[in-house]
Length: 94
Image 1 (cartoon, helix red, strand yellow):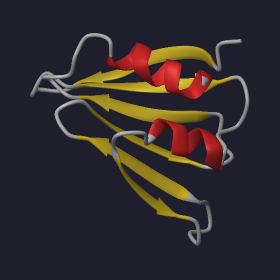
Image 2: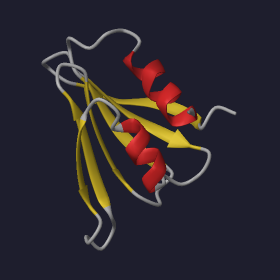
Image 3: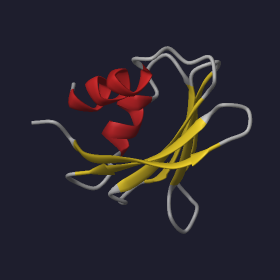
Image 4: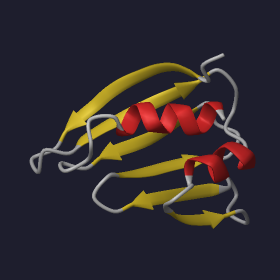
């Protein structure tokens, strides 16, 4: 079953990047975060009051979220491939 319920555009930036909020069927887990970070740089802060993470894949996207939330934000870079969002859903579904 697809883990993503909804994808909503929040903002179109002047540099042509797009900020989206992704809503999940279940809360974000550490395992989901690790899957999303495949091939990207993960910064994870488990000791924050709300365990925050940031995943950066150069020239593609930046993901920011909190473990336990049912939403996270993705900034799709101007030079990202058209299928980057589809690839993120595939990583979550694996």
